[in-house]
Image 1 (cartoon, helix red, strand yellow):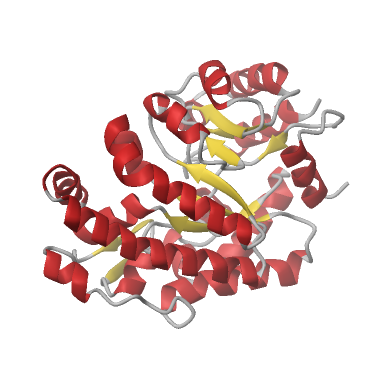
Image 2: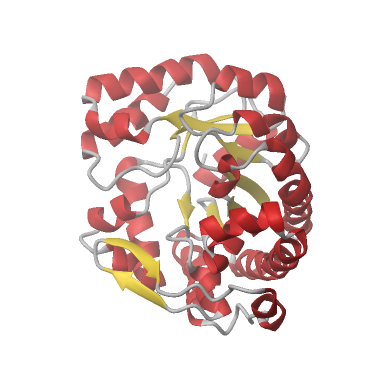
Length: 333
């Protein structure tokens, strides 16, 4: 059974299996493992793809991904981005400050803008090398996350409270690009699309329901219509949002270490795949034996459910290789 078949079994909830699906989020870790820099990883699709595949082959992970940083769409909208050798790319200027800026913000052609096109090429390159045997995850920014990238986190959170018209107009523009970008990645070969909207854990449920919930639902429905599955990734404590997330019909929901998995399963129901939720700091700092025990405890508890073994968020660049291997060993039934 190849990894693509294992992924399809996961989505179907097939009980007879040899291991629990293992998909840690790898970015800076994968770059360094492939003897390159984060700057190269984020700016060159061949480096990103080859780093992912090398890590997948060595650590026997069950999926590869195009995730790198939050500024692909931001760059397409026109914001200047600076690449950092050993750090996340930086947005040098907020390009949305007024309602006029939102109205004048052009909808980018994701197939022609450098950074979005780079990710689309990455999807095609994955399929050229892997020939459909491994699930490939694309990635887009969620509407609130992208609005924050364009207008600033603090500024956007204030706009949510003070200017609904501005907030809705900006997120509506972000939705157009999110759909375009997701569709282009699917057409290039992605089997699923990850939606990153981490800022949602920092707003209350009423604000999420008012501004974001229906947009997430619309985006997920659109991706399904394009023929791909969907993973929703919201870093941080999303316990207060679980009831809302249940109705989105996402295939996979990542849960960070602050969320109780039993509570999440109770609220989300049995049909959604849940991923997580070991604290990445513990994966980095604990011994191999301790990481194995943490992982094995989750595997033993959730092996008969729709579950992905992963840390709550990205595996840190300083994580010892043996600790990641300990997670893989723990996933074997």
